[in-house]
Amino acid sequence: MRRPGCMKSVTVLMLVTLAAAAAPSAFAQRYGQPQTRETARSESQATVLAWYRFDPSTFSSKSSGMLPLMMRLAESQGLIKPQFQPIFDGLLAGGVMGAVPHSVTLLDLGVEPDDDRPGTYRLTTLQLVLVLETQKDHRSLLDSLRAILAHYEGADNTREPELFNASDGTRCARLQADGWPDWQAVEWASMSRQRKGFVVGIGLGSIDQWLMTQPMNSGGPAAARQHRTLAKAPPAPDICEQMGLHSEASGNRQPFLETWVNLDGLRLQVPEVMAHGLWRRMLVTWQLDNARDWMLHAARDGAYLTTDVTWRRRSDSVDEIMRRPVALAGWPRDLDLPKPPGDFVAVFPVDLEGMFDRVLSVYRATMSDERAVAFDRSIARYRARHRRVLGDLWQSAKPWLVISNYPAPPVAVPGAATLYFELAEDVKPTLVHSRVQSLLRPYMKAGSVGQQGRSNGDADTQAESDPPDQLGQVIVRYDKGQELYWLQVEASGMLRVPSWGWSNDGRHLIAGWAPVVVTTNREWLEGAGQ
Image 1 (cartoon, rainbow, N blue to C red):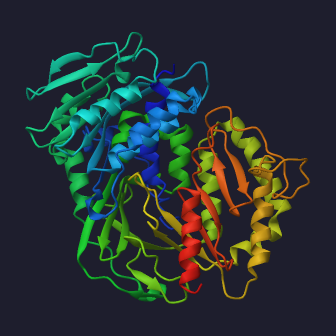
Image 2 (image 1 turned 90 degrees about the vertical axis):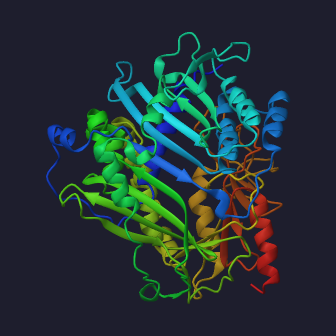
Image 3 (image 1 turned 120 degrees about the vertical axis):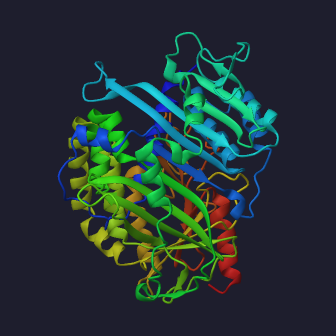
């Protein structure tokens, strides 16, 4: 059995860094004097360090109630190896969360140097609360929670949770197995009477601490002011025309996603981590090292999803807000791709070369200093070997990324969608395809689904490699029968996320949550005359 510490620390890390990962590269915030710890203390007594809320009611997709049953069946058949259990638990949690409006609040965080791994830190304090805003079927939610907890050391279903009353009198339960530190304790409560829903807290006292911040804007004077300031900022101006899009904005925006990160609060709570190591490198990579806080706003405007980001810089007045649109409510004039027949569409202007460089920079930021040096050498060799191919590839695609939900995923996991890129008119698709394959070949580990024999450098005839044997290993696979690629991240191969391939005419790259995304869109584009 696994200890839950790894899973929870990764959850917190994702919450904080995922928000930063959406910031476009143009958000230069390199100037200004570093804030002293004393200044931070006077400005931020925040008890809310990060906050996220998603409301799926804006969309028509439905979540399948079969997911927990399917997961348990796969587990009983031995298809899920213990080392990959966190992946499937994350999928189950995402399916449960994505079916209802929900929020996640990071309330407290503490770390200390890890003597066994110099230059890294381990958690000492954590308070994190998930709220599923539904008054229905709390029993099945509890069953899913128990199913997840049962996979981790000491949290077997035979252990009775401790019952206690929260500060508002709500009856709560807490599970803290022998040997678990306080930050690994799991608390939960059904708060239907208060119309709050089903609440799950990680960390001893997390539910009580969360109740003190209700509504969220009361989470300390600075936290209240910061969150209100960014949350109520006016929408970014419509820049569709100057971006080469035909604007279809209706002005009737329905917000469905907010993510707020209190960077000043994190600097106060974990100054060592924010000043050095992984998080510092991540902030510098996204040019957020001078930001006080940062917020992502996503809304629906008719069939379009629009996205803006707001942030405040420490070098500016606390009331000065920067705002930048990211996804626009308009269709590019130079795209031949028809609007996908899904429930929504989002259009992002992209710089493929910049996106590639940013992905590498983010991946590098997660490494230790020693690994980063080796990674730099490896990437330098890769760039030198493929310099011409990469240069040609960046010029081969139109500068747009289109996202839709066609076909709709069977499970309402946030982020499960379909991506489209379109090639420029003056390029030959077969040439681009061969270039992409040459770039992927070093990562295919001689893997080709259903193919046997010795590797001769051709993806279609390579011998199949061993599947991943530990969490974090990734192998690129090629399915010759369906003519598509997919990533294998666990031993069974049940999850093929993402899968990607070309349209029948070769001019559109399609990627999504499963091979059916590629095959379904090929049929749609063929019928649309593409």
